Image 1 (tube, rainbow over the protein chains, first blue to last red):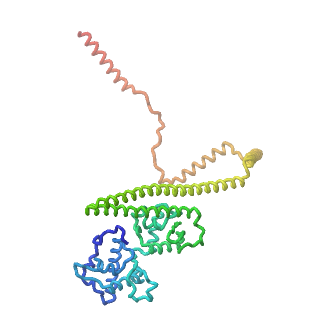
Image 2: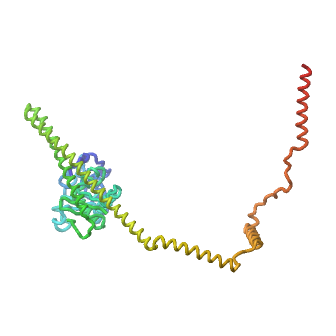
Amino acid sequence: MSQSAPPADAVVFPKSHSFPPFWTIQRVPATRQTQFKHWSNTIQLYCRTLKIWRMNLSDHLSSPLFHNYKLDRWLELEEAQMILEWMASEEGSKRAEWVNESSSGKAGDLAGRTTAWIYWRRPEEWADVIMDWIDSTGQKGSVVTIHEITQGEATTSQEFHGMDPDILEKTLQILIKRGKAQIFGASGEQGVKFF
Amino acid sequence: MGNTSSTPKISAQDRAILDMKLQRDKLQKYQKRISILTDRETQIAKECLARDQKAKALLALRRKKYQESLLAKTDAQLEQLQRLTSDVEFAAVQKDVMYGLQQGTAVLKQIHAEMGGIEKVERLLEENAEARAYQKEITDMLGGGQLSNQDEDEVEDELEAMERELLAPEQRVLLPNVPVTEVDTTVSSEQLSVRERAKAREARRVEEELLAA
């Protein structure tokens, strides 16, 4: 997303990011688990700061996230994929999801997986955030357009401003299931009514 | 895609409001596009001027001016649209209020109907008063209702005694008895004489002074 996002150096990486062993995938399962947890937190922090909703790995391999120029250490594509794969798993508390999951065949096959949604908040959590906003702005029972939620002037101060449309779709589907929202209108020109 | 009509919660008004809001979104997107265009035209004009192509620069600036006028027009349209949307939403609220008032009135009327009108209430109150008067008559006739003054006194005495008993002895605060003797409010003769003597002394002094003079 190329909104007026802050520059890449706005991210303050945690200490572990400049710790050399962090950049080598650990072999001992317990250590690797901790390492991946740290990586997951770092990636979430990076994406949250820069408002990256959908991360293309090949685009970001040369970014300060996956390449520490001071240490002269970097992650290979496969290594980054492993971390995202772990994040997407139950063990990594589903902090990521491959974008082309359905087309890429069985799990564990990393070949086609280069783009993932990074969930610094999962759709269920976004659902709560949006409902809170609707509640606090007294918009229950009124109609809001999809465009308005993510691009409108009223939401510029909200965390979900600029949200990836697919994540919004997932979030709204959750709200519909909960009976809190209803989507209507023609495809591409949809509105949401919140209850 | 979500257009599930299983729940009939979406009304025609909702759709109309959505249409207006979508139109507003479109206008906003259009404005964004135009402002990007004007920025670019300015850029082009600058570049042309730097390359000494005055005519081209002028053309770019003219295009920019025209687009800016479009921007102003869309602003006015946007405002109109937003006002209309607000009006519709407000009318919907008014309708809700009307509905609420209607419901409330209907319920109130129903309750009144159940009570059976003002005449019935009046009749009921009359009957009530009659019944009470009748009861009083019966009581008076039987004579059992009244206690003699003596009985009342005895009852009061008993109540007092009970209250005293209830106040346990240790809780009772021992207060000195109220004095029975009358308080002497007149000035004592002693004090009186003191004052009189002082007066006499003063008179004598004045007299002596007069004599001396």
